[in-house]
Length: 270
Length: 332
View 1 (tube, rainbow over the protein chains, first blue to last red):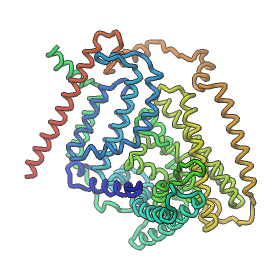
View 2: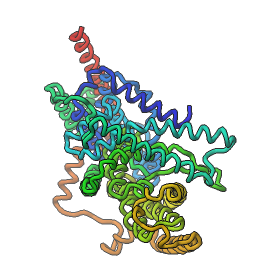
View 3: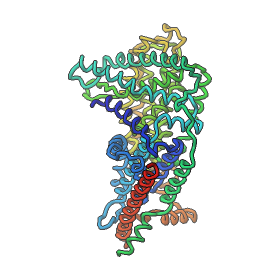
């Protein structure tokens, strides 16, 4: 599958997952958005050597995947984008932070631990964002953004961009396929046609924008884009879900729960 | 250049969110003042265009490799800095959520590093003054290349500052800067050439679409291709020369600055508040002394960690399945 077809498939697939009739999908989008941001902020706030503390934070992700019945394999594929950059930054740590640390019977540099926590933070943040987008459609996220008073210009623009990504990706796919059929054995687009090929796509996109505006005006567009259709009310279950998770995140951030339980249970055997 | 969530501390992320929000609020106000109802659909479609154009592989002559378009400078050259900035926010948000390129927490940083410099510095300081007396092929090429190179350099430098301020990496400041800047110089050049090619085409086909060129007579302000090349060469020499001098004499800028201010490159914190903070840190930290070599409790901590993790994960999974079991029974 080509890169473009892959991207189109990914967008449709995420739409399909987010539209499922699942309990987690029905939670108020604002609750999930706030929870995701707080979770990511808490994860990155851990000290650079606090591997065990970070491990505790994985419970939100594990619970999320089980409750939403999501495939973890699919999510792992998304890490390919973020991990190389995080690794590039983290790989320097073992060379510059050479304080010796004993981990069980093994002696390692403290830099190895900080590199590991950095990778964990990167992975956890990506997985948490995946949980959000896999259980909440972009329309609902935009609805939540409007609730926190993000200007409608910005929200409408985000929605339109999202809706037209697949249309324009399809167009690029056709253009590049036609080009490769006429210019076989060529890796990319020759520099002589950089301007005309992309420029044609650009002009067609601008014409399309005018057509979209006319269609929207004919359907009664007056600056506000009603994308959900109905108001989503905040239920008591949503508030309870938020409160429980905030409590757990706060608890795991301030108390070393894993060590406490480990000491308690491990102490019985030693 | 997308920063991942893991590379920013919450305080840095919050600060950058505040900066980006302020610019976004100002941009929204400016776009509203334009009161052009066609602008929002155009911004939406142009955002989708940037996504689509990023998927095209452009062959770089003589290298065998290919480059991509990022789009910040291109968007603002067509939509103007304010609408371009807002469009880039949308693009970055969708990229972060849908393609894991960037992140929710680092969005403020990414908006600042990629959208702010590209749209405001690139367009208001380079593109607009150059196009004041009308756009020509030479001016478009000059503005695109200069704009992309300069804004990417500024963005890359901001990435370094934000990462260092977050205390994420042990990499010295000088080494980090020396790694980031040359890579982004090459990326900026490729981006600049692609942007120039597209904008030159637009100028030939529909010149009224270019920002700052709507009401200007085409014949004024001649700027030849030869002049453009000369200016580019001189600028490259100046920037390259100046940067190499700084790089060779002061390999680590942060240490150099500290030595000048404090007389030493290592700062010591003394006082009761620091002692209290250190003791609080020791209490809260899971690996307070990182289980150092001679620590007697090293094995104990590791063992507790493993046992504790297994129990917490087990309890978490068990609770979820029990919760699901009861919910299923309830629905039946």
